[in-house]
Image 1 (cartoon, rainbow, N blue to C red):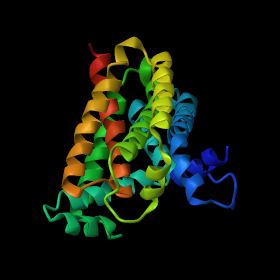
Image 2 (cartoon, rainbow, N blue to C red; image 1 turned 180 degrees about the vertical axis):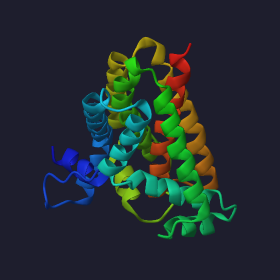
Image 3 (tube, rainbow, N blue to C red; image 1 turned 90 degrees about the vertical axis):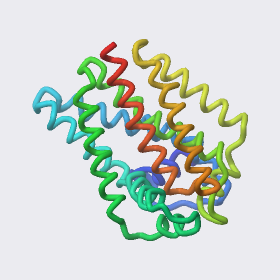
Length: 246
């Protein structure tokens, strides 16, 4: 339970316990609960959608969903997304890219990519059939954080120190297999059959993107973890749109 609360406070603005002792081991193992936090975020988005979808038009609803997700997470992953875009699209050397990503200031590429990301998410949410919207919203944050944990396990940490080191040291092969099976079974139960292919298709895309980043940086960072979460969500939405029309 403590691991879940740590993951919840780390990934969202929801603080159920104001202060408690955290050691490196507990912090690292909290990564196992990231998908469960994603499921909670998805549940909150579903509650919002259920409450207001009959009161507003589809565009307003899609905007509210996007804003709600940002408010719940505090824009944590979007911050990493922008920093990663600034660095990876700069065309600089590995060390310079890492310096750019560490800079708290956001550059032009980060802002441009953020606008594109939000516009794509808006369009995809509008394209999802109303009959599938609730289940897609429930699963989307789960998918993003599940693949993020997979990236943490699969690739080394690009910096010599940081929270990513704690996560990597704590995640074991049996643990990641058990977590993956649980998330897969949950998705198989909840997702309509026609949308199930969105999972492996998203996985392939995430793996290719994460391998490309690994080749450029010699690993991943906290910022690229946020990037992979956002990419996994938007790619999952994209394939859900495509598959829903087949």
